[in-house]
Image (cartoon, rainbow, N blue to C red; front, side):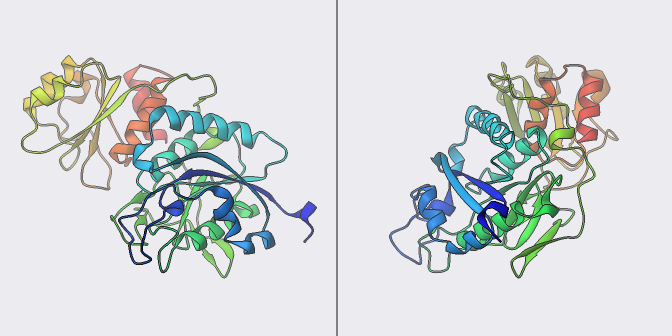
Length: 328
């Protein structure tokens, strides 16, 4: 395949463990994230030249725990600019794993293109004895360069698996198999090629109603984690936020002792569950209709905060907000 015929893949580097460095090859936790630039990451995988014409840029170089909504919004706007270019056939975003799922999900809801976008990271730093980053990045470029990845929404490629950003989450703290989807991956990378077994049915990317191109900021979102010691005083501290996601017990149950406090905040309240997976329904809910509260479908609390923030850029009507949560 000639260079002219190869897909043109742009790698946007955000830092993270995949660009991390430690003083020992066996140290996989005490490293410095974002220690390596994108040029060095790409130079370490010469096999990429057989897959695509790959170029890179350093958008940020941070530990992803330091990601802010401002930086995330800026990245989403930059991604749209890149996807609109005739010189780009697909994107790969290297990212720290702590907030990788949040970046991927926001892009899944806002990228205005059917071109492939793949978010990738690693659980071990680049200096580790057996780093997973190079193979993950190679697999991500393979997927981004594949015609089968078009119109699949934003994808996350980790540990030879292809996940949809709508479902994927970091399920464990340290294992290289940390990223999982409750409904299973969409496919896998096998012997250097992507194999898809299913697609996402919910709207995404160019098919959504969200447009971040003119936004200066995202609505402020807070997540409250239910526990037996949670009281009204903790909720009162959240006055001024635009929305509050309550990660409740079981089916999103809200303790009666904080219901009035949630109303005093003036925020849109979204009920999610702290369990890690599963749908939240209005059955047995804590006065949803009376309080105009919104229930998630199966979005986890961190995804609910992002979807809620985007929803508030479209509407403040509770019925419409509920429609959005059930649609996406």
